[in-house]
Length: 324
Image (cartoon, rainbow, N blue to C red; front, side, top):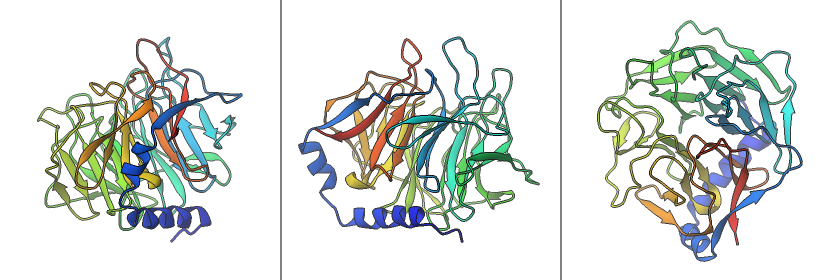
């Protein structure tokens, strides 16, 4: 089992969040606000990037996306809480947008899968080493269907990188896959969400589950499911956000909740999953509406970050959620 102080800190934060029952209410009452950051350097304006936090390098990682000229990118950008830096790597995944990325705790690597390169759907697997800040392509014996807009997350029990769904050009997928460190293993839970892609997804550390909401699919995807590492369970929250896709979400320990922002039909409203219900988080200020943004919670600088996306234009903005 991979072990590092950064990973253990993430676990401790999650456990501490469990005792803070009123954290979300307190945070909202203090007039939460999205604050635009002005780092000296920044990635170019990009939409549909893959973004997550790497507890090994203790940096947020952004990969790929496309720009206003519909050019697809394969640059890797790192944010240390203050500054964006472009990583110079000897090799990198080919250009793509709408790929998925998450941390695989046992190996201590980020796992990147899928996406679209402007011509076709991608089914390659790439690993990011936060210690050396390098990419390497994996050679799994078993390959999930090449898809764009899959949902990736960490297994709530063993910390493995896992993936659900995506769109393969003709069909939406409804398979749950687990990365073993060298190969993709298809899981066979007794129940699963309907096939979909572009859904809201995030680990809910307080309840040791993963939450999925809405997305795009041939069958109505406007429902909330949770994954406990063994089975998907359909939830029945009293409130739900508007149906959405191309949104972003991440676990925020200070709020003891999964926070969602952006996406179709959401506007400038910030939503949170409490483990049993969806509620709005009143904010004094919010960024303009946007689709296909990146989001990550940086546990080192203790801030929820969003980057890029698009509205009427492709955006290069970095924001954090904070108390006002």
